[in-house]
Image (tube, rainbow, N blue to C red; front, side, top):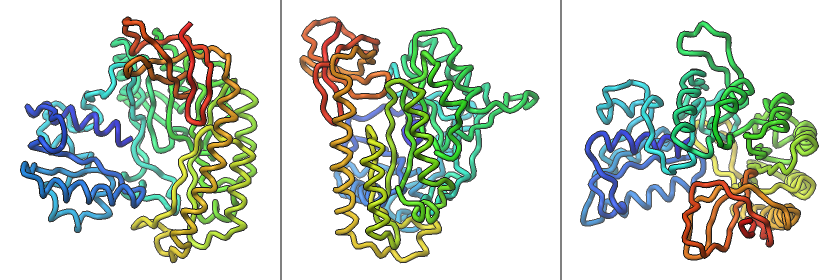
Amino acid sequence: MNKSDSERIAAAIEKNNYQKAENKETADLVVFNACSVRQSAVDRLYGQINQLKKSKKNPQIFLTGCVTLNDKKKLKSKVDLIFDIKDLTKVFNFSETDDYLHINPKYSSPFRAFIPISVGCNNFCSYCVVPYVRGKEICRPFSDILEEAKSLIKAGYKEIILLGQNVNSYQGRSKNQKSKNADFVDLLKTIENIPGDFWLSFISNHPKDLSSELIELMAKSKKICPYLHLPVQSGDNEMLKLMNRNYTIEEYKEKIALIRQKIKNITISTDIIVGLPSETKKQFDHTRRLMKELKFDMAYIAQYSPRPFTALAKLDDNVPPSLKAQREKILFKILKETALINNKKYINQIMDTLIEERKFDYLFGHSKNQKHVRVLYRDKNDLIGQFVKVKIKKAAPWGLEGEII
């Protein structure tokens, strides 16, 4: 979501006659759109702000993002302006609209675009600050999303990524509010039926809300990418209850089994947090065994850090940092092994690939199921932003290598 917000911030800034600087050090204005979901991101932000304040240029510094709620008092003296992303149009005198989501983004890619379908979250997971900083879930009107998607596809964009903290809970109406609610499956079906050669993907999902109807649609679709980011967070039921996740590990595993049964070549990624308050060795072992059993293609493994305003922040953060790091390392080792096993099955397969960039004699892109793909290519023809067919010759844990056919 932050990436999409940043594209709208860039558009608003350019509307005010600013031009993009080569780097922060040469800029007159630096806008940080900062996340506070993890403490490491907050630490990096403070470091960059302090560095800029000491620089010769000493630019104006504006700050937005979820970090502004947690650290507003500390940051106020370090920056020139702190603003809520919802006030973007006021900050930059954007007279055309008062809704920042109506600003046409300055897309960072000419062929891959993000479309927010909702902001905020109603789940209140006990470790997560998002509902406090972005508020309750608000779904964009169905017609607004459809209009943005049509515009992008008409402009030749090759991949549309729908964004939401929990896309599965989407309920949207048209602007006139007369039509019945459309759910997430309705939205996908409608966008999929737009004429054009494009892929459609989405993040992020919540296991309790991911429906069998969505799985069936993905299995039949020719445009929806066979990729799901489905955060499990822990392999232990007691930890899941503490996290307020509202599903059991047995229910999660049933959904994974159904997904893999129905959707060919599905890539599944997840999120996992280690070292929550009072996490025991036995509870961690449940997560370790789950990682081995489910063989995720990718996992974003984080060490728990208490976030202000959350329910878990009231508990003692009593798992030592060294033990958190050790548990993260154990899970990462398992992930690296299972990711390689998963990727090896694609050797000698032909995969549709969207080429994103070129570096010397190599093209880089990703497959329809979101695998990183590298191709040796010495031809001068420009394939960036195009779909090509690649026969896979080599596999590594985090990507594939092949040749264009």
